[in-house]
Figure 1 (cartoon, rainbow, N blue to C red):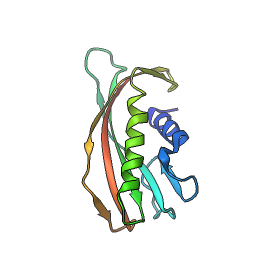
Figure 2 (cartoon, helix red, strand yellow):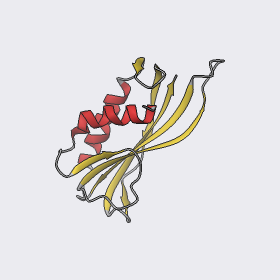
Figure 3 (tube, rainbow, N blue to C red):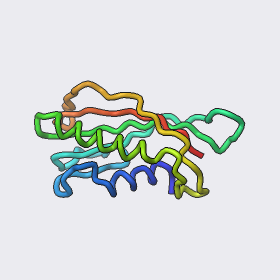
Length: 134
């Protein structure tokens, strides 16, 4: 299991306050427009060497994009705040990625303004994180 799969599994198990019917949490951007009222897409950015000499430590960039076909941002804020609470609680947690390692730190980098996605026809917001893990 990769770190990306581990993070997805943890967030999907929580559901981020999204209703189970009509919503989903996806590992990456789908090739087709999702047929869901609310959905979250995890987008992984660059992976780079971590600080220090330990070559097992890596730095990962993660963006969490929350979409809602309703023209309101309140539910997006709720989902992103819940994801933030779940992720920040994973700091200093041993993960099950093979080989097992540690999530050394997770830092919230910020939140986007209110956006509209013309392709998905949805309101959207995103949060970005930096994760240091071995």
